[in-house]
Image 1 (cartoon, rainbow, N blue to C red):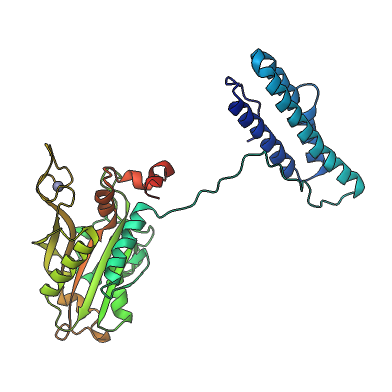
Image 2 (cartoon, protein in one colour; image 1 turned 45 degrees about the vertical axis):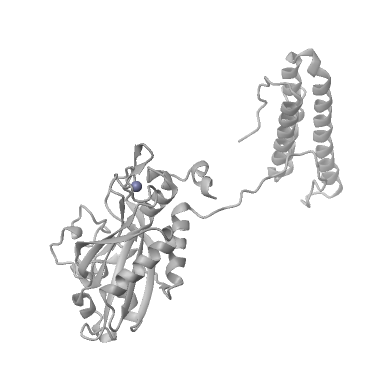
Length: 373
Ligand SMILES: [Zn+2]
């Protein structure tokens, strides 16, 4: 935006230094931005014109300054005038000396100009949480697997044992790519509703034993509110080997939760249902905010709804029907077994950082996000 002379209400030394520093910087930027002799001349006239040029405007504005500030203002104004004149002069000399050549100009450095602070980037709280969880499982020998966000119906549903009329296939929940009516159902493209398709994709290319962690974005047709978003993040895990039991599942997850939330948390498994695991469970951890008591002093503990437990993930033993789809790559359900689990990275970040509105994570306001930089 082009520089305009702003109204000064504060005539302290600091305010004057800032105002004149801004004017210098703006002038220099304008001169640098002008790429032709005509452009430079326009900048010169804009700043130096006797009638209504920017320097004249500043001069006029400051006529109203209080008496005690006038001396200081006079010095600053002189300095600014000299600066503008010198830069213009340098350009003119350069122009006259070498016609048509646009060599680098303005080599002088003015150390009175304010410096340019370069903000250092930092991990987004959700990415930070994801990376911390990944590190916990990497220590247990898990590697990270990745897959496409735009998936086929086959990988997102069919190969994960979702029966044709399962409610999750409903267009109310799933965001499909438009204009695919001519395709067979299993080939239709959609935005993956979970990270689970990567389980199938990995088992198609890697023979057992495998231990993988799958972090990534997923999409569902959920209107945004304090706890929902059409785009969110999951972290999923899969371990397949010979003789893997539910005991391995419990031991692994219990260890991982203690590593992530602190050694004092307890885990609790309650029966559940997922199409791709059998048996299935929901895993709770004892509330790491109230220590499992359900209260914070006299107040009820909101994150655990006073129960002392927080639901963290869904898990279970891989359903033999899922292995049937990758049987030819060494996953004979009679010979191998495995467990899988999946959690919402956003929800864990909400709990971890004590944030009560999911939308804050995705609005891109650095004043909010910078708190955890
Ligand atoms: Zn609690």
